[in-house]
Amino acid sequence: ASISPSPFLHLAKPGLSVQPWAAIMPGGRAFPGGLMHTGGSIADTASSAPADEAESLSGFPSMVFAGHTKAVSKAVFIACGSKILTSSHDGTAKLYDATNGNCEQTYHGHRGAVTWVAASPDESKVVTGCADRVARVFDTASGKCLCALQGHAFQVSMARFSLDGAQVLTTTADRMARLFDAETGVLVQSYKGHIAALYSATFSPDGKKVLTTSHDKTAKIFDTQTGECLITLIGHKAHIYMGSFSPDGSLVITASADMSAMIWEVNTGFCRAILTECQEAVYSASFSSGATKVLTASADGTARMYDVQTGYCDRKFEGHLLAVHDAQFSPNGRRVLTASDDRSVRVFDTESGQCLGVFEGHGEHVYGATFSPDGQCVLTASEDSTAKLFVVGS
Image: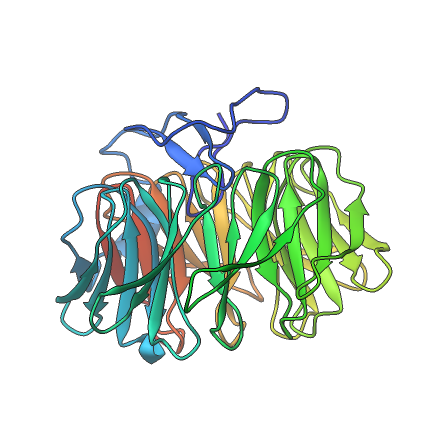
């Protein structure tokens, strides 16, 4: 079985029918849109690092963030890396001190698995997305729920603050994205037009546009304020898992189950390049900080780096035993981080493709991994109910 992208693992391969209303079940991983598959994994005692490589690496975490009783679906840095937010299938989100591992706040109120957590730009608020079909906005310090964002027909798989923190964009499987007032919880705008479940929704860098990706094989770009669909990106032959804007907002990259990623011009909808090296579904794709490179993660167990202008694959990052569901550049672009369903995370040198480190220690699937703002640490979220911090070094 193929494994889906972070933080919601295990999506079926193209052609396998799954129900968009599937709930999160023990042993299953939920994906944006509520799709679920239970797939297999390597044995609990197996290591994904070759013996000679593992001996030269420090694969032990420097900090373990415990306290959740079920899978940790997402973990993110805030406060310049000094604090950590987590969301969990136990129905809560938590705030930890990254320096000592202490839990400083728990955010209660949901009645299902919390699959998403994010902080507002000024970090005064926290938003969560949940299987109970509600997103909630909390005061970061006190833990008080400020408002509930309601009206979704299925689980809220993503929730993002606008650039000014005044609004929240949500994603569900009911074919539309929604924009809410973060203070009152009032619905401000809806983004409609897809004919199947949404996988993701994100703001453009200037906040003026919204990009959505769907099971209907298309991505759409909307005007944030009016809700008007400006462009529909058509060309993929299977559902589109994720999409993101280039840093300057002029390009979009989409990742699809058709084993490709596509680079599009935002203003015209023209497909500039089709990246087709992967042998299985492409789960995520993102631009480098200068938008000269694109990094993909695939069910074929690899991450790949492409040149944006030529579409040529410059580098392949290998070593994982199972699907790579997330890949990202370090803040300075010199390293690549991959998270896999083989329960490990790897750090590679961007230029040479050499694996610099293998971080293991999770007892179950790793849902996601991210660099700290200074690039010195890696934070993971796992089905084993913990988040862990690993030191990468300079």
